[in-house]
Image 1 (cartoon, rainbow, N blue to C red):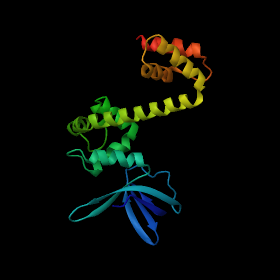
Image 2 (image 1 turned 90 degrees about the horizontal axis):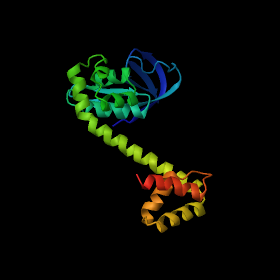
Image 3 (image 1 turned 120 degrees about the horizontal axis):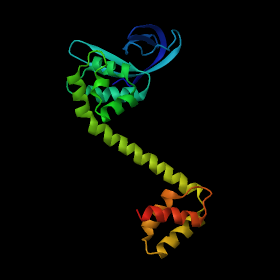
Image 4 (image 1 turned 30 degrees about the vertical axis):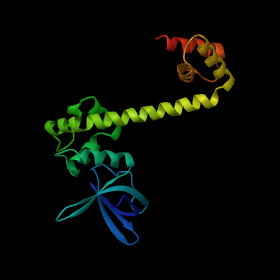
Length: 203
């Protein structure tokens, strides 16, 4: 498995890069517009997927890991080959592809060359749940970072005072602390934190 190819760009044609890696020229297939900003003679790194068949071995290249990861997801869909996957990435970035799939936007996917509505619908059907789960995991991770930053920047005394006050009002300490961490920002007094946390707890 070749994860990436790094070397000097010998020449670029539409949909093809030839990269000199220590005297060996690797032919890497890309989307029609991919690599347009690359300059011949300069050092480049291209992330790759290697496709091995009985009569051929091909490298498909991408400038970002996000594109490669989306490509891998797309070719796992029944009926979607490397060419169709590259066509989809030629018209939509990984983020926009994800959005189109999550919102059942079959028309947006069908704009890719060689991708009909039936294939686009199959992409939505097979990837929607997987991408939704991935998006949710990223949201949880981002929220964890936010909570950690809030916890780091807030005065521990203010948070503790607010938690103690909420516990005295009958809320469990776990619920009180969770509410405090969700509403507390730098510069807030314990009284302000309590008020904000109460609004959240009574919902």
